[in-house]
Length: 124
Image (cartoon, rainbow, N blue to C red; front, side, top):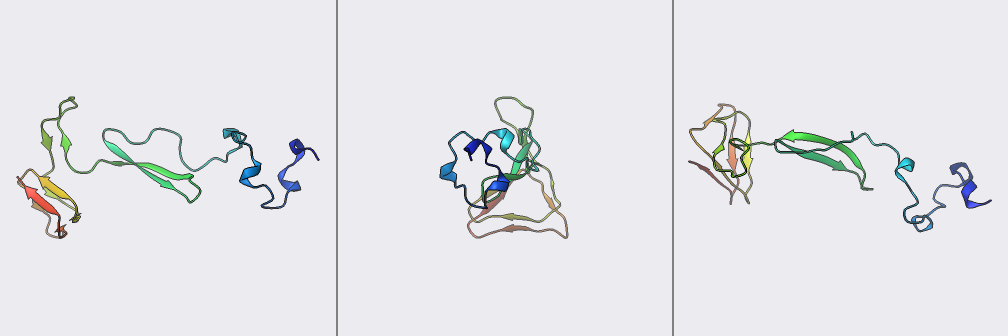
């Protein structure tokens, strides 16, 4: 049977190896859709969260708001940084990180700020 007439019903599982498929011969039309919505992820106010499976396929993509402080305005020269004044969820600063806040800072009664050995947290 000519190769152009072979279909999945005429092959047993695993009989076509990757080396048997010519480079560039599998087009986008032949790829199955994923659950990921096409688009651009991330930006000035969000970071992308991408999940990739063992075969390198994107299985999930979403945006998460940038945590922490922000620079005031959208000027090209970033000079003034601001942050909130209330810690309303538990925060852990890793041992290989430095962190800072412009005070005053209030930590909610049921929340903690944990600074691992080697990490620093400065309130200015």
